[in-house]
Amino acid sequence: MCGQWTVSIELVDEQNRPIEKAFVSFIEIPEGDAANGKVFEADSEKRNVFVTKFIEGERVSKAYKLWITADGFLARTAATKVIYCRKTLEKKVLEARPADLGSSDITGIKGRTVDFNGAVIPGTVVVAENDKNNKFETRTNSEGEYYLVLPEGAYSLRIGGSPSLFCEVEVNNFLVPKFNGFMTLDIPLQGRSSHGSDRCTKVVMKFSSIKK
Image 1 (tube, rainbow, N blue to C red):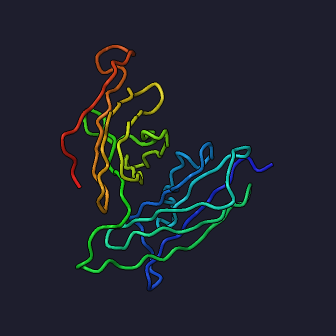
Image 2 (cartoon, helix red, strand yellow):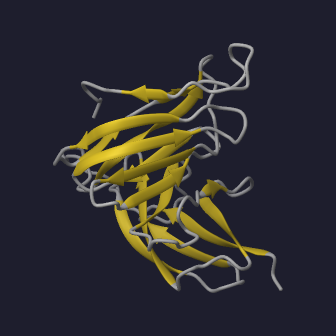
């Protein structure tokens, strides 16, 4: 019995120098797979190693597709293997982004979740579902940031805070157009006790324009 184990991704540039400010995420995850909602966090000692945890008994695949992005580097996809109940560490190399190059050819949304005082909220679940009932899920990292890769289309979004602390927000008919890159969607979450009550009022948000 292993209890839990980790999958780690080490990021370096073409000169093997560490890349610390980056985001790593599973994409194209099968329905019901334990990788849904998993977040890679920077290791506390080696900041260019990004780690996520699996728990014994969870349903996992033998291999996954990753999406990796970092400021100043070309975003890329990569494959990673998972060995049940065994720690793994793989090194991935990112190429520097030429100054005249446009955005990534992957689309989606990114942003942060914050409370009404502007403090970030880690561990927030972000779920997008399109009209074909396909679900895409992630969580915010320790800095309250999230990235969610989404194909072109219309989505219903659900953004929920930490259990029992924050109220869920819905965004209906959210459109992801055909373009390259990520739209920024920062979400403020209301604390359950903000108005002296533990009850939540349903919050539905609409947006006329989103920052790219």
